[in-house]
Length: 293
Ligand SMILES: Nc1ncnc2c1ncn2[C@@H]1O[C@H](COP(=O)(O)OP(=O)(O)OP(=O)(O)O)[C@@H](O)[C@H]1O
Ligand SMILES: [Mg+2]
Image (cartoon, rainbow, N blue to C red; front, side, top):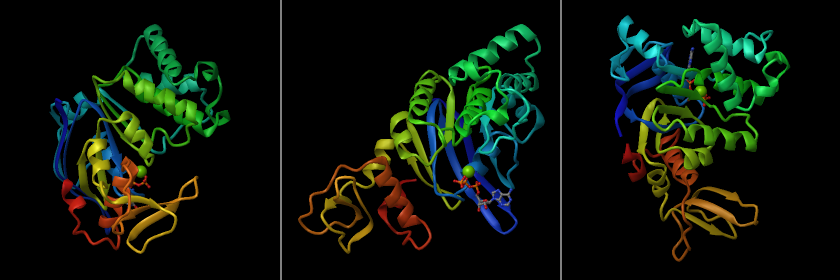
């Protein structure tokens, strides 16, 4: 893995809220997922990496450029695609006009190759038939796909996607997975709340909790944190930190299993939930799972 993203001591405050509390991280080519509960700092981190927000302290190097100087930022912006969590669409534009407008801002001067590129990215997200529809008349999931399309313009070396699969139907989520599979040579960072996306399409995962990186590794490593801590029984045990009834009517539990329990193979979600539960508000912060980062 070639390191393409490096951050050291990244800190960001909004008033009294410490959104990022000295984040150190490295990322490379391939797909990295950012996992974390609401308010963990995922969007703040992505906005800093996208050079739209400056940090209060710390350094960031992207694609070999420091972004604390204008030249470095410009060099990175030319190779960057970014889907914000809440893109500000011009709702009276059609899908085509909107993506074309972004392409103009991205210095695609010549009309014909630019239009070819706009058509290409709209097709990648399956919106070729809606290219002429006004954004305000598109469904929420389709709007999300317009946002993904504009981020894909020019096949960027660094693709930052803030909750790209939120609101996508199952078919479109599959399509999205396929699409990212073709971007393997670039660095893709995406935030998500869907742990099945992480298992299916990410080579690396980073868990942010309260502005700290609490885990960095592969999805399998994250799942392995819950090894021996997941079991299924017919009723909730006091040693369970989390428990829910499965569709088969059994109780899947995470925590300290009772003696003799048959443990289950942990998933990425199990690993994440155990980590988040033990490092989140009220967590004991002292568990071995938390030492992984
Ligand atoms: N512009 C802002 N002004 C004030 N506080 C902010 C601002 N942006 C973020 N915050 C705060 O910083 C913290 C981190 O927010 P952030 O949006 O990065 O979280 P997140 O991990 O993306 O959450 P979510 O999963 O809900 O999208 C939160 O406490 C949030 O309230
Ligand atoms: Mg967010």
